[in-house]
Amino acid sequence: MSRREAVNSGLDKMKQAEEDIAKMKIDLAAKEIVLVEASKVSAELLEEIAVSTAKAEKKRNEVSAFKDKLQTQADIIKKDKDVMERDLPAALLVLLLPG
Image 1 (cartoon, rainbow, N blue to C red):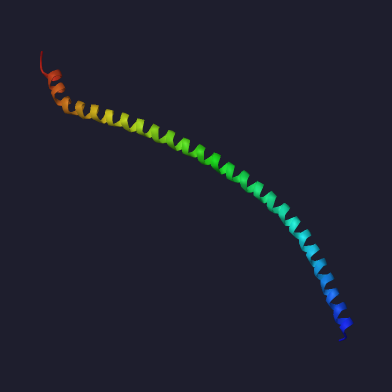
Image 2: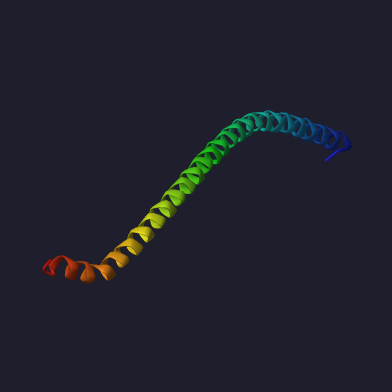
């Protein structure tokens, strides 16, 4: 290969490299657009998840408070029941004794 051919071959390779780089820049720009859109979608989804999580946490707290209230009422009822069951035999005797 002559020097001229070698220079021309090198120039052709440089031109091809420039064309390849130009194509890669176009591909990169298109992928950046897709990436920006995917980032938006991800951010929106994360916001929705955060809102849903906050709602679920609030509901969990409400349910827990309601459960605690019911447990307190159940404890009071059980205590009253235990007292009544303890006092019932004596009350029945009083009611059944003749006047």
